[in-house]
Length: 439
Image (cartoon, rainbow, N blue to C red; front, side):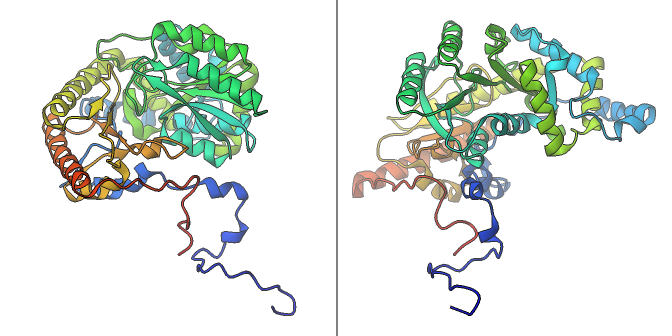
C-alpha cells in the first residue's frame, strides 16, 4: 500500500470504466436486455427478424401527416417549439380520455399525465412506489422493459403463472399470501391484460373482477399496461381493470402501437393523489414532454379518421398473425406448442425438452433468422424453453421464410440432443458477471 491510499484487493479483472467504483449500488441491476443486444444483428437485411416488436407504419397517411406538421409550425410554431407543462397539452389529455372511454374508463383530463412513451410512465410509477427490496408481482413471462425498470430500482419480481386465459387468479392469491407470510412488502401487481407481451394471451373477462378484488383484499395497487388494447383482430375491446376500480389502478397507455412509435407519446392515468406526484416526477425527469410531438398527435386525432386507421393496422397485423400461425403449423417439429393471439404483436413458442433457446440463438442468427429467447422475459432465470416471435413488422412472405429457417435450426438442435444428450444451461441469477465494464 502507498502512504495515503490502501491497496485495493486484486480481483483478477481489469476495469475498463474508471468511474466504476463511483456508481450508486442500484446500477448493478442495470444490464442490457437480450432483446436490445439482438438489434444490431437482427437488423441486417439478410436476417429475417422475428425478434423486435416494431410497429408496421406502412399504412400511415404520410402525405396528410406531412401537411399537418407544416400547418402546426406555420400556425402555432411559437407554442409547439416552446417549453410546455409536465402535465401535458390540455387538448391531448381531453382526447386521451375519449380513447380510454372505449374500454369503459371514465376519467378526468386532470388525472392524465402525458409521458415520453409509456415506458417513462412505468419508470416513474416504479420510482414513486418501490424502495429497494420491495416486491412487484408480475406475470411470468413479463415485458422486458418493465423488468428493467424494476431491476433499476432494486425491486424484487415475483412471477405468477399464466394460462391461455391470462393471469391465473389462484396463483396471484398464493403469491400474495406467501409474500405476506415472509414479511415482504408487495407494492403493486404489474399486468398486461390485453394481447400480452410476450405471451400473446388475453386476460379472460370473467377473471378481471376477481383479479381486482384479490388486489383490493391484500392492499396491493394494480399497474395496468395496455399498449395493444385497441388492436384486437375482431375489433373487440375489453373492459379495462381501471374501469373496475379507479381508486386502485394506475393505467398506462401509448400511441406507439396505434399511431407512431417514433413520436414517443404515452400517458398515465392515476388516482388523483398519485397524479400529483407523477407530475413532480415528470418535471424532475424531463421538465416537460415535447409539446410539438403532442400537438402532432392531437392534430391527427382531431382531423383524421384514427379509428379507421387502427382498423387498417388490425387488418395488417391479422394477416401477419395468420401467416405466422400457418407457418408454425406447417414447419415446426413435433413437441412444439404456441399461443394463438387474438390481437397485438406476438406469439409465445415452447420448444421440446432439452432445447435451450438462448443457447440456440447464435446458431439461428447464423441461419439468418432471429427471435427473442424466453429468458429475457423472466427475472428469475426461467424461460429457456420459450421464445417470442414477433409478426408485426415483416411481410407475410418473410414471416413464412423466417419460420422455415427457424424450424430447420430447431430440427438440427433436436438431432444434436438425441445424438449427444442435452446439456442443462447454467443459470446465474441477477446481473451477468463480469459486467460490461470489466474483462
